[in-house]
Length: 596
Image (cartoon, rainbow, N blue to C red; front, top):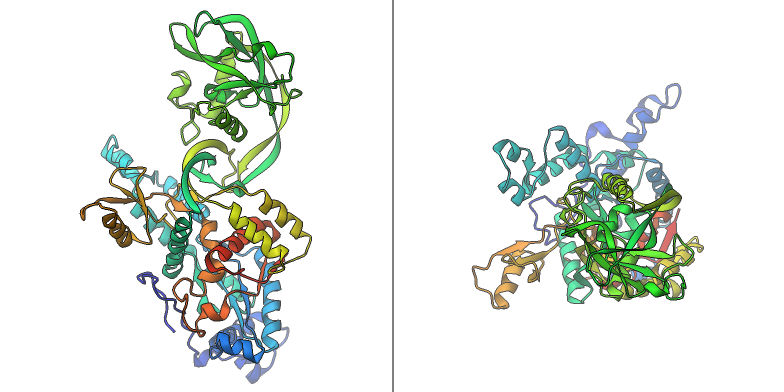
């Protein structure tokens, strides 16, 4: 067997070499010569025993059995994909639990005479790993810098504080080499009988080929698209995150009541004495309001529907303020607050849907670091969103627009990784259409192709896959699988989806572009869960060994038998593996989902 190296282009699926036996590491040498002296000391025996097991190939499935012979001799392989822990992580109780459970399954079926493949590996953990390197850079007084930022740096001193992409990735790989490997060593110390000759890392060249292949095939099927939608923006991480990476907590805040003054219909931008009382939990988003909405059945506001109101503190010159319409929709809860709802399509997912329904302007009033942008007016530009909240409320109070503020319990969305409050933003991102894929994954359980243990989680499975939203798969990070998309020249709209730069160039020429066409690869990387969603089949030779003979690992060990994992990643990982597995290989990736 040969080792996959960093220089490998990933075109072939290879195995790592088994450790070479040495004379000074024979199992139970001490025990045979001296017997156990005094109290049993596991350190004297367990490491030698494990080393002997690994050197003897005890954890490897029978290499002579093909997929064909397995079906005839009654010894179907038992395949158990190990959930890949973060490559720079350390052992915790969750790992100990899955090792105990999976090792029991692997050893039990191995003793029954079945070829067992327990596939180990690690995940590149895009956000978590990049965060560690960025923290190290901050200690040095440096940060990531785009080509544009470096080119426009005000001085050489400022330029030296900016780390370009290639240098940053070198730092991440160095960090991975320094910190990586500890967790796999710890798994060995627990006695995990995994086949380490088939150990994989999600950014191995062979697996990276699989990631690009999956993206291209899904795009060819019309299941991957680029669009402008409301996303969960993490200001601390400076990237979009998926719905599943947002955690909600009940926290005490305030409900702010203020006046939306009705516009004088005779003089645009001028106020009347009449006003509409509105309540909000986020005054800083007032700058992005494009309508006020009331319930059409609410008698209090029927006479105001169709009129316009003035946005507080929105000076547009000549003493005038920006005006927005009062609209009516049954969505508004007449009992909440004042029964009048400010609509901010650029910063609230529900408002975004109403905005599309009524063709309202979508205004983004924040920068990516959650500071206020130029649309908020000079006094507020550059302020943090929470600083802007305090200043705006103070200014509105001085202007006589404040009614009251009272304590209010609210659901606050926080980033699972960074912990900061998520900011809903409208942004151009890459998405996977999940409705059809979700229906196939749902049917796989309903039809019995996959069994979920314990069965009570079937209800959770059905509920989530029935009400599934498209999956935002682009991340504004540098560590990860760069999206295999190339833009033509400086265009942001014309792009080519290809497996690599060479294929992109060929496709561009075929499309009529000249041979000297300049292509620029997408800066964003793919969500870590996209690559780990390919784990059951990419780790055994997909797509490299597709359609080959029955002796390949892909033919022998896919689909898998059992996926044992924690119930907390049922949707993060398990559902996505099932969706991608069925879509890309036409079969369910395993027969049993066993949750602890």
